[in-house]
Image (cartoon, rainbow, N blue to C red; front, side):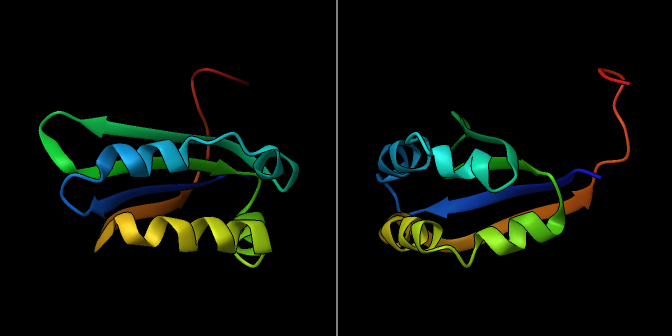
Length: 100
């Protein structure tokens, strides 16, 4: 069963583009550890928020990824851009009309 994590990340004013650049750097590690998709988005209506939608092979794969040194380093590098306002939701995907 696929696991989804959809998050909103509050950004320090003026740092959105820097956070987006950081979050969209190529990472072959993510696909190797069970990440099926990692999409980053923005809205012109909210300049201090970045949206991230992740799909993982499982909740366990997502949780295990957080312990990896490369992922921890990426999180640490992103912290200066974050305001501390976070939101979102997590859920298990049960189906889609786009695939069998």
